[in-house]
Length: 303
Image (cartoon, rainbow, N blue to C red; front, side, top):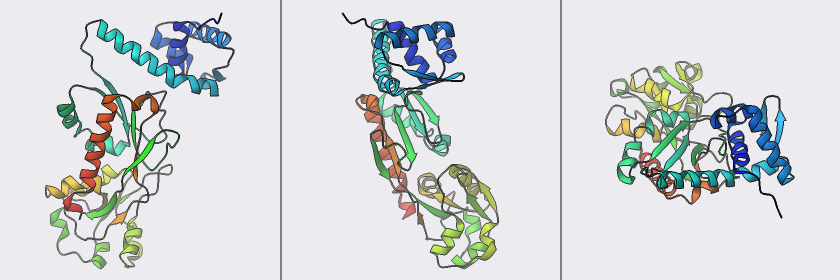
């Protein structure tokens, strides 16, 4: 007769795998780290498989552990849902959404009320994360990223964005392409670990203009949202992503002094791990987010 691992042992494994350490799992489960270690060792012995590599004070999943974690996470989520319903609490679906930091800071947070209004109460955890993100450890249900980082999970390209020269109306005047280099320029760089962002040098090259060293001067920001805010403040002309600047162009806070645009090198992609794909709230949020992104990028102000 096969001896099944204890529920407490499986719970200890799942918590340690998500948290990355026995100490963090012990704090979550209100037991000692030694107890967590003992419970997991018992599970490993009963299954005859090693689940963790111990690396200093952290633990790293083996292939066997990686295989087990998503299924256990789903099982414990279902147990929690049943417990809440049987306890008489109104069931509120929980959704963990991960997006790039620039999108979390204003763009998506300002729109979430629309999703809640149309789909009902949802406990949403909105995370602004750089790639890569730990899907299973953080129980992420849906991830929007620039570029296809996560082909090991179901991933779809949802929208192709571009950048546009934008500034406040008072700065625009009657700018000609060759005169743009004489205005204060706002530069965006996503940092040494991020993807390359179109530069003003790229823009002038596409426009067939040689700006000289003038294209290197001006303010700079390490996020698309921060660069847009600088432009809205009247500090210069920015190359702004359409998804972020469409609303400000529509309401007149910004204008496009010149029509030349540059398409970003990669699309925005949506990744949903299989453990989350069957949940109704995930499917509803997926479609809503796709619609919001496409509505912004397809704004008449960007045509």
